[in-house]
Length: 182
Image (cartoon, rainbow, N blue to C red; front, top):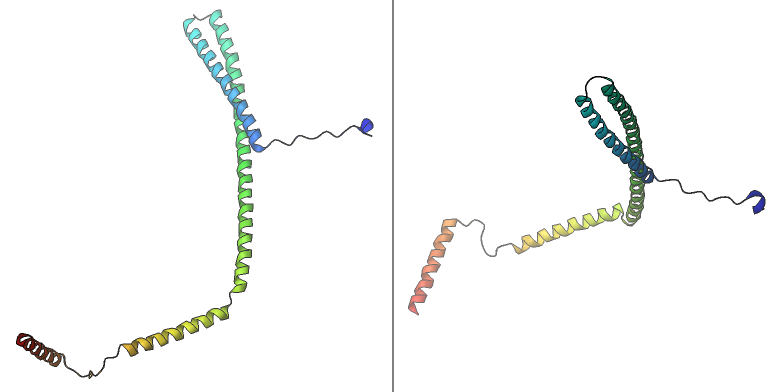
């Protein structure tokens, strides 16, 4: 069968956007070089036209300069077309990268969503509410304990500050007498 119909040839993979862009850029560079070469030739012809007298010799130099100028314009048109193609390829490449980024973002968001759903199964609102209630009860008990510990013993509530200071001075003088008596 292979002899009658032949073997199917393996297709080469299509060029990537980057390959196509590189190839067009190379062509653009060669066209730029040609334009530079034609510019140099045109400047020579301009000098020749300035140096020669009007007449058939000057007309011949002008004709050559016009031919070179037409070539230059043709190459400039090709260069502009190549640069437009490169621009279009860059836009396609940018769009493709944007889509790849969007795909990665979607994959990451799906994974995060799945993880959050798994975590939410273990957390129940009722558990949180009961824990909050227990914490409030514990805080109330803690406040009662602090109040209980902060009570003063055998100190009446209606003591005047001046009376307290007077009593302190008497106590101090008594301690000083004892000290001096030793």
